[in-house]
Length: 236
Image (cartoon, rainbow, N blue to C red; front, side, top):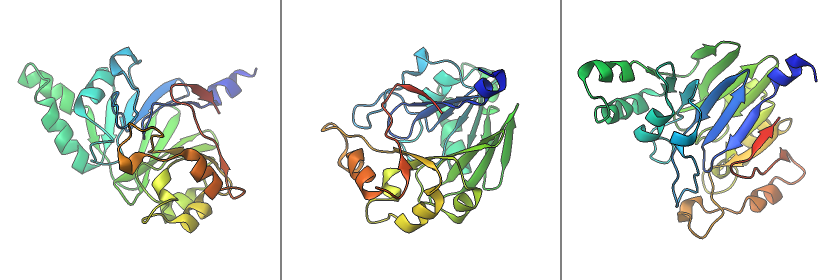
Protein backbone atom coordinates (compact mmCIF):
# COMPACT_ATOMS: atom_id res chain seq x y z
CA UNK A 1 0.00 0.00 0.00
CA UNK A 2 1.22 3.50 -0.81
CA UNK A 3 2.63 5.11 2.33
CA UNK A 4 0.76 8.36 1.69
CA UNK A 5 -2.53 6.46 1.38
CA UNK A 6 -1.88 4.76 4.70
CA UNK A 7 -1.17 8.09 6.44
CA UNK A 8 -4.33 9.61 4.94
CA UNK A 9 -6.55 6.90 6.45
CA UNK A 10 -8.85 7.93 9.26
CA UNK A 11 -9.04 5.49 12.17
CA UNK A 12 -12.32 5.96 13.94
CA UNK A 13 -13.41 4.38 17.22
CA UNK A 14 -16.78 5.05 18.82
CA UNK A 15 -16.64 4.82 22.61
CA UNK A 16 -20.37 5.27 23.17
CA UNK A 17 -22.70 8.28 23.24
CA UNK A 18 -20.80 11.19 21.59
CA UNK A 19 -17.33 10.00 22.56
CA UNK A 20 -14.88 9.24 19.74
CA UNK A 21 -11.20 8.59 19.34
CA UNK A 22 -10.01 9.63 15.89
CA UNK A 23 -6.50 8.95 14.61
CA UNK A 24 -5.23 10.68 11.51
CA UNK A 25 -1.75 11.61 10.29
CA UNK A 26 -0.22 10.00 13.40
CA UNK A 27 -2.25 12.26 15.70
CA UNK A 28 -4.77 11.01 18.27
CA UNK A 29 -7.84 13.17 18.95
CA UNK A 30 -10.67 12.66 21.44
CA UNK A 31 -14.07 14.27 21.01
CA UNK A 32 -16.52 14.81 23.91
CA UNK A 33 -14.75 12.28 26.14
CA UNK A 34 -16.75 10.83 29.03
CA UNK A 35 -15.51 7.86 31.00
CA UNK A 36 -17.40 4.57 31.31
CA UNK A 37 -21.01 5.26 32.33
CA UNK A 38 -23.81 2.72 32.60
CA UNK A 39 -26.69 5.02 31.61
CA UNK A 40 -24.86 6.72 28.73
CA UNK A 41 -23.34 3.51 27.42
CA UNK A 42 -19.87 5.03 27.25
CA UNK A 43 -16.98 2.57 27.47
CA UNK A 44 -13.95 4.87 27.68
CA UNK A 45 -11.43 3.83 30.33
CA UNK A 46 -9.04 6.77 30.08
CA UNK A 47 -6.20 5.29 32.12
CA UNK A 48 -5.97 2.46 29.56
CA UNK A 49 -5.97 4.82 26.56
CA UNK A 50 -3.07 6.38 24.74
CA UNK A 51 -2.51 10.03 25.55
CA UNK A 52 -4.25 12.53 23.31
CA UNK A 53 -2.62 14.91 20.85
CA UNK A 54 -5.65 17.12 21.46
CA UNK A 55 -9.08 16.96 23.09
CA UNK A 56 -12.18 18.70 21.72
CA UNK A 57 -15.32 19.44 23.72
CA UNK A 58 -18.41 20.66 21.87
CA UNK A 59 -20.38 22.20 24.77
CA UNK A 60 -20.94 22.26 28.51
CA UNK A 61 -23.50 19.47 29.08
CA UNK A 62 -22.54 16.80 31.61
CA UNK A 63 -22.80 13.98 29.08
CA UNK A 64 -20.08 15.50 26.86
CA UNK A 65 -17.14 16.06 29.21
CA UNK A 66 -15.82 15.72 32.72
CA UNK A 67 -12.58 16.94 34.22
CA UNK A 68 -11.30 13.59 35.50
CA UNK A 69 -11.62 11.93 32.10
CA UNK A 70 -9.89 14.79 30.31
CA UNK A 71 -6.98 14.95 32.76
CA UNK A 72 -6.43 11.19 32.49
CA UNK A 73 -6.14 11.51 28.68
CA UNK A 74 -3.71 14.43 28.84
CA UNK A 75 0.04 14.43 28.56
CA UNK A 76 1.86 17.71 29.34
CA UNK A 77 1.74 18.45 25.60
CA UNK A 78 -2.00 17.82 25.09
CA UNK A 79 -4.15 20.83 24.24
CA UNK A 80 -7.84 21.02 25.13
CA UNK A 81 -10.09 23.05 22.82
CA UNK A 82 -13.56 23.99 24.02
CA UNK A 83 -16.09 26.86 24.15
CA UNK A 84 -15.65 29.43 26.91
CA UNK A 85 -18.57 28.01 28.92
CA UNK A 86 -16.63 24.72 29.14
CA UNK A 87 -13.26 26.32 29.89
CA UNK A 88 -14.51 27.81 33.19
CA UNK A 89 -15.92 24.61 34.75
CA UNK A 90 -12.97 22.63 33.44
CA UNK A 91 -10.51 25.03 35.10
CA UNK A 92 -12.45 24.88 38.38
CA UNK A 93 -12.41 21.10 38.24
CA UNK A 94 -8.65 21.14 37.85
CA UNK A 95 -8.24 22.92 41.19
CA UNK A 96 -8.88 19.54 42.86
CA UNK A 97 -6.07 17.92 40.87
CA UNK A 98 -3.18 20.39 41.11
CA UNK A 99 -0.86 19.63 44.03
CA UNK A 100 0.56 23.17 43.92
CA UNK A 101 -0.32 26.56 42.39
CA UNK A 102 2.47 26.01 39.83
CA UNK A 103 1.10 22.62 38.77
CA UNK A 104 -2.41 24.06 38.54
CA UNK A 105 -1.15 26.83 36.26
CA UNK A 106 0.46 24.23 33.97
CA UNK A 107 -2.81 22.30 33.79
CA UNK A 108 -5.01 25.29 33.03
CA UNK A 109 -2.60 26.53 30.36
CA UNK A 110 -3.48 23.40 28.39
CA UNK A 111 -7.03 24.74 27.94
CA UNK A 112 -7.64 26.90 24.87
CA UNK A 113 -11.07 28.55 24.65
CA UNK A 114 -12.38 28.26 21.09
CA UNK A 115 -15.10 30.03 19.13
CA UNK A 116 -16.77 29.91 15.75
CA UNK A 117 -14.37 30.42 12.81
CA UNK A 118 -11.25 29.52 14.80
CA UNK A 119 -8.82 27.32 12.88
CA UNK A 120 -6.59 24.97 14.87
CA UNK A 121 -3.52 23.46 13.21
CA UNK A 122 -1.90 20.33 14.62
CA UNK A 123 0.97 19.35 12.35
CA UNK A 124 -0.66 18.28 9.05
CA UNK A 125 -4.22 18.34 10.40
CA UNK A 126 -6.51 21.37 10.48
CA UNK A 127 -9.59 21.62 12.68
CA UNK A 128 -12.19 24.29 11.96
CA UNK A 129 -14.61 25.40 14.67
CA UNK A 130 -18.06 25.76 13.14
CA UNK A 131 -21.41 27.18 14.20
CA UNK A 132 -23.62 24.76 16.12
CA UNK A 133 -27.01 24.94 17.80
CA UNK A 134 -25.20 23.86 21.00
CA UNK A 135 -21.66 25.18 21.51
CA UNK A 136 -19.41 24.24 18.59
CA UNK A 137 -18.99 21.58 15.97
CA UNK A 138 -15.56 20.58 14.65
CA UNK A 139 -14.43 19.92 11.08
CA UNK A 140 -11.24 17.87 10.70
CA UNK A 141 -9.48 18.62 7.42
CA UNK A 142 -6.55 16.53 6.19
CA UNK A 143 -5.33 16.42 2.61
CA UNK A 144 -8.62 16.66 0.68
CA UNK A 145 -10.80 14.87 3.24
CA UNK A 146 -13.23 16.42 5.69
CA UNK A 147 -14.77 14.80 8.76
CA UNK A 148 -17.45 16.68 10.68
CA UNK A 149 -18.15 16.04 14.37
CA UNK A 150 -21.54 17.70 14.92
CA UNK A 151 -21.46 17.47 18.73
CA UNK A 152 -24.97 18.03 20.06
CA UNK A 153 -26.22 20.12 17.15
CA UNK A 154 -28.68 20.11 14.31
CA UNK A 155 -27.28 20.88 10.87
CA UNK A 156 -26.29 24.53 10.36
CA UNK A 157 -25.43 26.60 7.30
CA UNK A 158 -21.75 26.54 8.30
CA UNK A 159 -21.75 22.76 8.21
CA UNK A 160 -23.70 22.51 4.96
CA UNK A 161 -21.29 24.85 3.14
CA UNK A 162 -18.30 22.68 4.04
CA UNK A 163 -19.62 19.57 2.23
CA UNK A 164 -17.92 17.04 4.55
CA UNK A 165 -17.03 13.52 3.41
CA UNK A 166 -17.89 11.96 6.79
CA UNK A 167 -20.50 13.21 9.28
CA UNK A 168 -20.76 12.09 12.91
CA UNK A 169 -24.30 13.16 13.81
CA UNK A 170 -26.49 13.05 16.93
CA UNK A 171 -29.62 11.03 16.23
CA UNK A 172 -31.88 13.76 17.60
CA UNK A 173 -30.78 16.00 14.70
CA UNK A 174 -33.01 13.87 12.46
CA UNK A 175 -35.59 12.40 14.88
CA UNK A 176 -37.66 14.13 17.56
CA UNK A 177 -39.29 17.49 18.27
CA UNK A 178 -36.15 19.57 17.67
CA UNK A 179 -34.97 17.66 14.60
CA UNK A 180 -34.25 19.50 11.35
CA UNK A 181 -34.35 16.67 8.86
CA UNK A 182 -34.31 18.74 5.65
CA UNK A 183 -31.26 20.70 6.77
CA UNK A 184 -29.53 17.45 7.68
CA UNK A 185 -30.27 16.02 4.25
CA UNK A 186 -28.78 19.14 2.65
CA UNK A 187 -25.65 18.49 4.71
CA UNK A 188 -25.38 14.74 4.33
CA UNK A 189 -26.56 13.59 0.90
CA UNK A 190 -23.01 13.09 -0.40
CA UNK A 191 -21.47 12.00 2.93
CA UNK A 192 -20.88 8.84 4.91
CA UNK A 193 -23.13 9.42 7.94
CA UNK A 194 -22.43 7.83 11.33
CA UNK A 195 -25.02 8.17 14.14
CA UNK A 196 -24.09 8.93 17.75
CA UNK A 197 -25.62 10.32 20.95
CA UNK A 198 -27.76 7.27 21.63
CA UNK A 199 -27.68 4.05 23.64
CA UNK A 200 -29.74 1.09 22.47
CA UNK A 201 -30.14 -0.61 25.86
CA UNK A 202 -32.74 -0.96 28.64
CA UNK A 203 -30.12 0.63 30.92
CA UNK A 204 -30.13 3.88 28.95
CA UNK A 205 -31.57 7.13 30.17
CA UNK A 206 -34.95 7.49 28.41
CA UNK A 207 -33.87 10.56 26.40
CA UNK A 208 -30.89 8.66 24.95
CA UNK A 209 -32.50 5.29 24.24
CA UNK A 210 -32.83 4.90 20.48
CA UNK A 211 -32.63 1.93 18.15
CA UNK A 212 -30.28 3.06 15.35
CA UNK A 213 -32.25 0.92 12.90
CA UNK A 214 -35.08 3.46 13.29
CA UNK A 215 -32.71 6.18 12.13
CA UNK A 216 -31.52 4.04 9.25
CA UNK A 217 -35.12 3.46 8.14
CA UNK A 218 -35.90 7.17 8.47
CA UNK A 219 -32.94 8.04 6.24
CA UNK A 220 -33.40 5.04 3.93
CA UNK A 221 -32.29 5.73 0.34
CA UNK A 222 -31.52 9.34 1.27
CA UNK A 223 -28.05 9.12 2.79
CA UNK A 224 -25.25 6.58 3.13
CA UNK A 225 -25.42 5.63 6.83
CA UNK A 226 -23.15 3.27 8.75
CA UNK A 227 -23.88 2.06 12.30
CA UNK A 228 -20.66 1.54 14.24
CA UNK A 229 -19.98 -1.11 16.85
CA UNK A 230 -18.56 0.30 20.07
CA UNK A 231 -14.86 -0.24 20.73
CA UNK A 232 -14.10 -1.36 17.20
CA UNK A 233 -11.57 0.55 15.14
CA UNK A 234 -12.73 1.40 11.62
CA UNK A 235 -10.39 2.55 8.88
CA UNK A 236 -12.12 4.96 6.54
